[in-house]
Image (cartoon, rainbow, N blue to C red; front, side, top):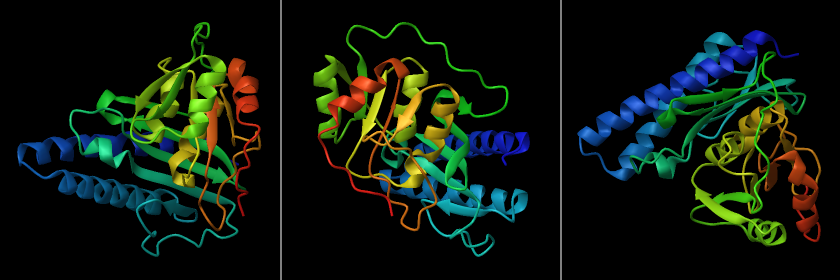
Length: 261
């Protein structure tokens, strides 16, 4: 069972990794680095920091990271009860386009497949959203007459367009999955819908944080989001205001979605 220290660790690690990313980003801009150099340095720096920190702080736990293996310092995650699922730099594209702020760091813990701990840092905004015993449900104003649907600025999925049409909503384009999910908490969006492919590290931390604040989280067919599968592909999700959940799911009910093995 997750402890208060687990929640605190996720928050601290996400925040510190974000600070390191801001520092390297500023330095690389000053040095005239290319976009590809910025993205490569960011991915490697954050991954190495989080892996080394988790090896020191939670050596008995397994780790799944977008950026690579656990350097042989963590146990095999197959069948593990506790698995840290991290995305060291969510929104690599946006990180490489200063001064964009819609990128994030994800640190989550899944226990027996369920996301119980999570932290999403938005480093360029100096914000970190995290789970914990003292977290209360978010208090948001009334849903606007035209709900705001957070979508990718480069490839909005057809399902998001269908939701927007069904709800009479408007599209809000932004970068990383973490930024879009936290936009609902920050009252910059009311719904985040994604389909067409994500992996567990893309949404485990955002889902943990959103659920802890009383938001609806699920697959687009309404089934629960579960983690630490042999194949980390997790193709779709919805995070939204609870008042809109039924309408959002109804608007996507005619679509067949892949099962998670």
